[in-house]
Length: 298
Image 1: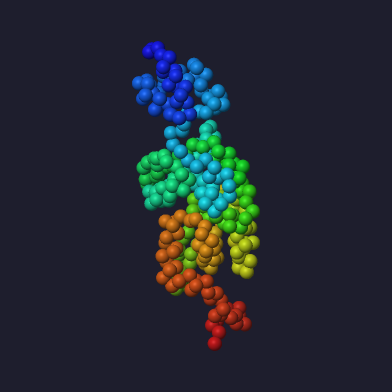
Image 2: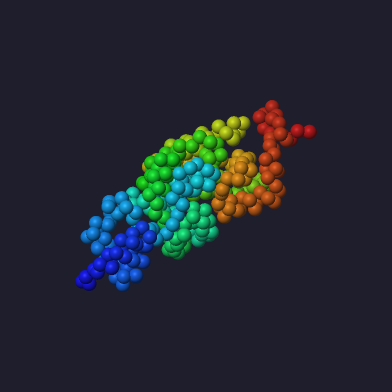
């Protein structure tokens, strides 16, 4: 093994906190493994290293992105809550998207100030999937403290600590964009399309979403209900028609982020007749006769 020279130790001391292991190895013409081993031997790694300054991370990210509540941080927290993964053994947060949503992943990367790479494509269930992997201890802490997002969240996720109406809707929109769907259907014998939003989650999350939307949006309409779809704490809710139009109007009016590629079909179909057309209450054109059936007025 090549003996370490005094000037090499000096370079190592000056590089702490400024260069990565790979960069130091290149400068000293050594392997990354030898650099790490010599750091441990000199007591420059692990707890001692953290007390000093640690090596500079290979990729940068805005570590305090989830420290404060704003429309963007709440939206992406919802997206991570539904479609992301907080790893248990390290400070890694990952999120994967299919190829048709790659642009959304690139936007996420830009919005959080990450200068790393997007991995992929990898084949998953017959489609190309791209993954963004970000390491940040501050993210992991803030996602837990502010949004109740922790490792192994799939069957244990609880609602976030949010009070502001807009922040809540932004978080819910992230949930829907991640683990829900926005569909446009046309039923038999009906001339108009029917937009439908569906969402799956834990009982606590689905209850929270349902209660909030009923409280703030749909008091005069039929309540949004939910039901259990599996025996392992997975629940499902859906709402349709004018409720979806009102929801879309709200998020666009308040500049709440949403995944355009997921809403594109809804936007295209409803723009043909305009949103106001679908907000009309068609029941105003009807009245009940003695048999309880509907008939047109006039």
